[in-house]
Length: 529
Image (cartoon, rainbow, N blue to C red):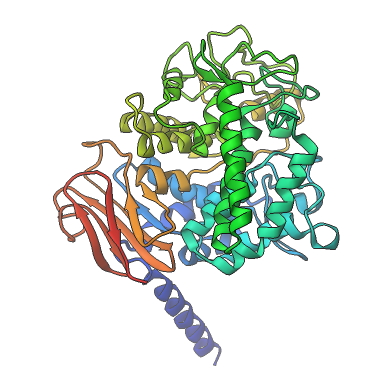
C-alpha cells in the first residue's frame, strides 16, 4: 500500500508538472532545471520564506515564462533572477509580501517590509502567472494602515506605485483588481502633494528617501527638487488618469491628465540644464546642481520628456568614459566631475560614483522607451545591447574557490565589478550577508520588454520591437508568457531549423501564429477577444 501511495503521489505530481509545462508551446522546461539545481547546490539557504529552495523548481514551472538564447550567461542570469525573486516572497498573517532584503534590516517595518523598490517588485512580478503574490503585496502597502488605508511607512521612500499598477494591468488586464486600488492610489498621490509639494508645483525629496543616500548633489537633510520624485509623480499621474478612464471616472481622469501635463512642463522648464544638456537636481538655493547624475535619465522611464524637443542629446553622456561609462557601470555621477569618488570610508551605500542595479535597471527601461518610441538619432539597438550586457556581466560574484556565480547585491565598484557595500562590510568586520540576492532591481522585465521587445498595450494589438541588434543571435525563444489572459510565444529563428516554425521573427497566441517578419523589426499581431 505504501508503494502504491508513493506511485500515486508521483503520478499526480507528473500530471501537475506536465499540465503546467503545456503552457510552453515550443520550449521544454526540463532543459532549464539544471540552473535551479545548481543555484540550490551552491548557495546556502540561510533564510526560508514562503517557497523554500527545494520547491523552487516546481514554483518556477508554475509561474514564469521560459527563455532560451545562445548566450548562456544571459540565459542563466534570467533564471537566477527568478530563483532569487522567489526567495523574497514571504507569507505573513496579512498575506504575501515581497521583501527587499532577505535578512532583517533596522530600517524595515513589520515582516522586514520596505517600500523603496516596490515599483521594481511590481514590474518584475507582473509576468508571474499566480497574481496573489502581487495582489497581497499591493494591498499590504495601499490598504495595510489604520482603517484599511495607506500603510504609514509607504511614504518612507519615494515610489511609482500608480504607474506600476497601471503597467501591471497592461499585462494581465485584471480590471476588477486594478480598480479596487484606485481610491487608495488617489489618496497616495494627494498625500505626496501635502508632504512634498512646493508652491511652484514641483516635488522635493531628501536623497535618502529616494533610496539614494550620500548622493553627489544632495544630503539626508537637503530638500532638493530631484528628477526622481518628480518623474515618479508624473508617472503616477499618467497611471491614475488611465485607471480612472478605465473606471469610467472621466472627470478624475481629466484632472490627472492635466496634472501630468503640468508636471512635464515644470520638469522640462526647471530641471533641464541647457548648457549641460541634462536633467539635474535643483538645489534648495534655487540653483541647478553643478554635476550630471545618472538620475537625469529617470524622466524617460515614464516617457516624460516631450519628443522632438532635443532632450535626447543627454544620452550621449551614458557611453562617454568621462561621463557615466564604466565596464561594470554605469556610474551614478559623471566621472569628469570632482564629486565623483569610489570611497572605502564613510557610508556603505553611497550614490556619488558606485553603480547601483536599482538605477541601472531604470536607465535600461528608459533607454528602451527612447529607442522604441522616440524619433531620435542618438540611441540605437547597439546601445541597449551594450548596456544590457554590462548589466548582465556585473551580476556575478567570484567564490573563494574561484568559481564565478550569478549574484545580485547592493552596489558595485564600477571598474572591477566587486560588490562594494559587501566588501566594505567585510573590511569593517560587520558583514552578515545583508545584500545577499538583493531584490532591489529588475532583470526579467528588461529582457522581456527590451531585449525581446514585448511592449504591453491596452488594446488587442500584440507589439514586439526587439532591441537585440541584427547578427548577434540566430535564434531565441520566449515561451509561456501569460498576456491578456492568453499564452504568448515569441520566436526568432534565422534559418527556421532551430524551432521548426518558420524563418524570422514570429508571434504566436495560444499556439496559433498571428504575425511574422523576416527581420528583427517592429512586429504587430492581433488576437480576438
